[in-house]
Image (cartoon, rainbow, N blue to C red; front, side, top):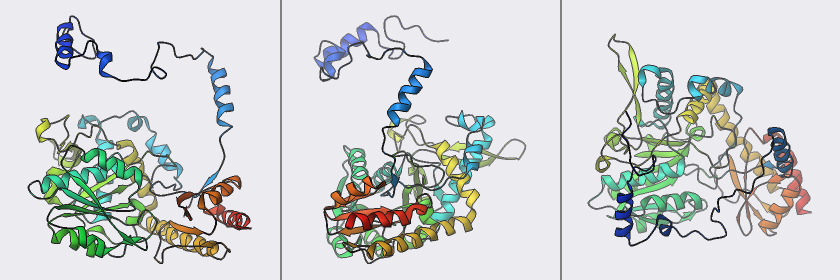
Length: 445
């Protein structure tokens, strides 16, 4: 039975007296006084949208969308397009999956829980770390959660996380937002030819270091060659080593546990999702020591009353499940359906398929860079390193102008410097690689 609320809104159960008391405490007259909304954007009660039939709306939207540029994207820097086999859609779109929000009732969600358990198991196998949660929002929030975990572990001494100076601006902004108010500080260390500058890192690391973050591959596509040394810097100062990566790269590169990683974060959306322009699926795996510090929740395997294997959500350390003072995170949902898609895609590829796709990511980047490098006016790759999936191109002409002309030829690339472009090749756009090279040559002429 729902309790009767005499005066308040059904969505905010405050009586008129409650509201008046709170407004008086805040020294304002109305709720509207709590907000500063410019008049030109404030809602005046009218949407200004004329009612139309479904057919008319579809026609109008089709005309609007037809004005979009149709470009072949060779863009990456944290968001990647990989061909998603049709089996992913066919299975993930089943009603029992697509209609499920959170698997609170294990007795009716065993299938979904098992799929998430398999997703966790894949992360454990790929990272070498024994604990993985059943998904995070994206790489940025996973990094932020790892930083807060490090702060809790070293709450008496360490309050600084060290990140590379090339950390993508959006990821840095999310990290800053998360640690604001926690007492944690963010400092940057330098990079040397695309990889971590160990001298710079050692110079700023100290007893206040709670965590050191590095990426492999880096945001510029290079393979980080000094992971063990970076881990040593973190551990020598009693901090954690947090490694950023993605599911596909993990199938080929050094196992994070073998190079000293304490926490692995990053993106899993390289599998299971088409280009999503910002939406992600976060990875979070760690050591058993930090089991009760993991944000979100885990799917665990147990037995039912008939001794049959059963799955359930366990160690739910978020605020919705335990007292706020004991919560490790305010994460209020997860990407369970997206994790399901990633698990299906990974299972469909299998170990050999994953490795083969990862090896193509190395070979195709190397080949494309070599072809662009042969064109007068470009140097590719800029960094004398091994690359995974993407690389930076130096241009003699202003990079923004080159990117604009490439767009007029039908191709989109990143501008990452005054004279630097970044190019990413995957199995989705590799068929257009020759045309991209021809466009680079045409623009240079």
